[in-house]
Length: 222
Ligand SMILES: [Zn+2]
Image (cartoon, rainbow, N blue to C red; front, side):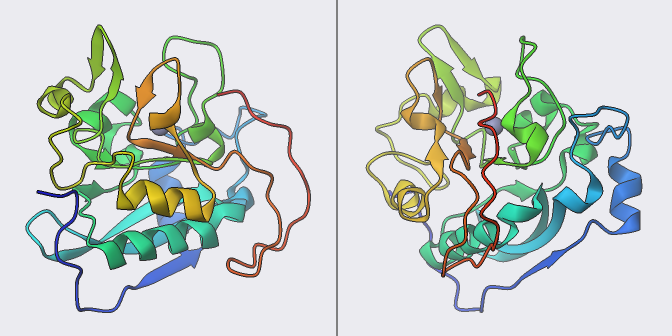
């Protein structure tokens, strides 16, 4: 068994847009909090529609909100996951779960932007800036020796028993993260956060993604 299914024969499709009014209405006061000075402005965010492989070997289209400066990089990431045949359970905005990270994780939902603090801390999450993406949290639970989150991820505590949708090192999905420059939470020392990836580098122009900005930003906390 591997983490992958057969790659789809259909072409990958994706779109990048400013967050449409109907989506803003879904997010306002839920994952987005304009009254908070640190919350990204609408122009700082992008709304993506992305095709992905499903666990039954089919294909589906999902949605994701990320930092606008990461939009092209995120599309490239999902294009690569599609090409590998990496299945994604659910790709819906966290607003469909009332911006509850726990509820979204328990539903095995993959998501990105959510203006929130790190669980149990007063530190702004990378998700609050749209710089982090969670992928298949049930197949890739957050783990410490004494704790697994979400609870539904207990069946995947054995990281040697590789099943579809899992992210392990060494493995093809982490190889894509490495190649494209994403930091993987499974490499962290304080806990294993196998579903979490983050763009922790400066935004910079690059020929592949043509992001265009050379403005460094302060390194956000965790
Ligand atoms: Zn995360």
